[in-house]
Amino acid sequence: MMLKAMPIIDTAKTLPLLLSACLAVLVVGTGPAPAAVAEGDAAPGAEAIPGAETKPDGPPPEELKTLEQIKAAYGGGDYDKTIELAKDFVRNAKSGPLKTQAARLVAQSQRKKKQWDLAQGAYLSLRNHYEKGSDVYVRAEAVAEVLRASRDGVYHPLVQANGGQPVGTLDDDAVLERALACLVKSRARRLELRLPRLKRARTAEEVIQRFVPMAEEISHLRSIWPEMSPHLDRAAVQTAALRLGPLSQAMLAALKEKDAYYKARRQERGLNTARRQEMTKYKVACESLAAVENAFLETMDKLAGTRDWPEGQTLRQKAEERREAYSKLAVALTPPERSRRTGDGADRGRRGTGDTRW
Image (cartoon, rainbow, N blue to C red):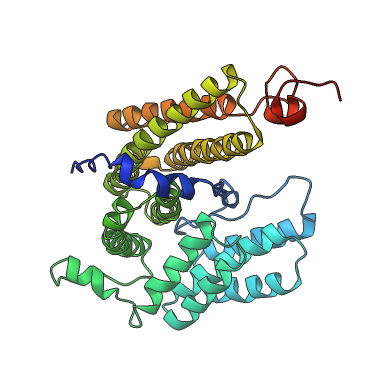
């Protein structure tokens, strides 16, 4: 679905407000890297919640041996033994990554035993082994949410989506994946309702303040269900880009006028202290707006749904051009060092006459 661009704003009416808003330098945080995924750690029949990566020379050998015994019990379908051994391991082991794997086996075993309340608590406990906000943290929390809504082991929103036909219970890994997909679709529909608010952002900084958290939520949805449609990723990027475009056109036009004005003043030797302070103010605005475009590009990179998207490449190119323009203007609007050749009123001598013989 193509979204219409917002109309170009009236620079004369809105420029003072936009310039004022841009003076606050944008600081866009980047979240911590997701917890590492250990390849081959998942026990047979386990859903795809990865364990933490282990270093070959890190964990004590006896703990590795015990964990293998726990995995063997799980693989053999002896869930009672798995739970008993894994809980004891979580209490006494020293290796954090191995304890995380054991906690995952506890949660999976409780689910396989159809102990829904215990399984929900076990997945919440597993969640706390991961870094808050990471993809694996979000996925474990999503499994717990599905279990909370399925006291009898049946995820009823999935039944409704299936036309009222039976879908099975959540001890089946395939049913769990379908339930998670149903949860993601529901969240994506709610998230899409925030696009109009993004479109109404009044400043470039406000666009980014709304776009970055939204993009993070989209990434989390994809970590829960990797097959999620790219529609939401692209709609969010397109909405943000189409709002940044007109805002940036007005700001670039105004800042270029300021650059021309101060270049003329320099040639006339008219850069006094007040004008230097004004230049610094506009330089900061340029740096802030360049940071906005950079944040947009970095956030776009994190959205898997924007890959192999021709229109996205066009939006990226335009954002890069705007970032480059702001960076050049920031350099141009940097006040020159004071010297007698600048013609600053403060450097001209007594009463600005040019007489330096004091």
